[in-house]
Length: 407
Image (cartoon, rainbow, N blue to C red):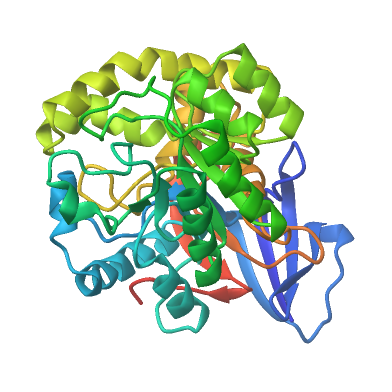
């Protein structure tokens, strides 16, 4: 048994921090957490004193790509062997865990399943990995690579495979489930980094979306939808998806369906912030910059309205690994929730812990309560006084054991 006495504890559930707190951990689980004077611990337990620190639940990035990308040019990804991509992605896992992230939902990669196994087996330090494997896109959809001959992507890209018609969509979904994915990722609109479509253009028919969600529902697997335009958001929710990713043009119809389905909104403010602020310095193509800038205000408005409506808003960055959007800087999403959306610091931390954990296929992470996994980060500052303190990570623990990405 281990006891952590700390100056401050954020448990992910309470609306206030616990001062002079104690966290008791045994066999990878939280035994108790709360005010030090109310939490007993055996005299012979191992103890650690952190009087000036803040303990928070381990951060959860609900939308990443673990493909080891080092360029914003999607065609470069096609030329990168999976072996090289996986090797680079292990560096990204190390950076994530050093930044306090104890879980990451990988929504589109060809190496996520292998990374999940390597972390689980202790071969590579990193956060828990939950992966969709490769996403599913229609031909000429967001997951296609429009600037290369079709034969080069007919069998898929590093981030997605192509399917057209309900039968193909159902079969692709079954292939992912056969691989043992944690969720499915589908594309129901165009996007800013796909050349010949736009965020407002809906993709996949109702029958195609339903074929994929039906297969997932039968085995209890969630479905995430890349959905930026209003019609694609509505179609995705109406046909059974569980999380909306990006949601640039979310309208009242989408808000109502999010509430009706108790679905989660993962807006990925961080990648849009980086692309619009600095994308032209890091190789984002002009057509991508134009679409991102055109959608920026609508995106912020959509997140503000979702937040005000009480929709669960989760922290996910859509970071991929290149210098513009590197893993390790993923706490930016929580900072943007405060600075641009108007969340309180506590709400932003909960968005990056308890709410983000809604997107995962387990219910024992995201908070520091009895019987939850002992996944937590030790911060040197107080994130409730200044949200930027979420970057000041002294140590990260998964299952109660310290994990050092670069130890």
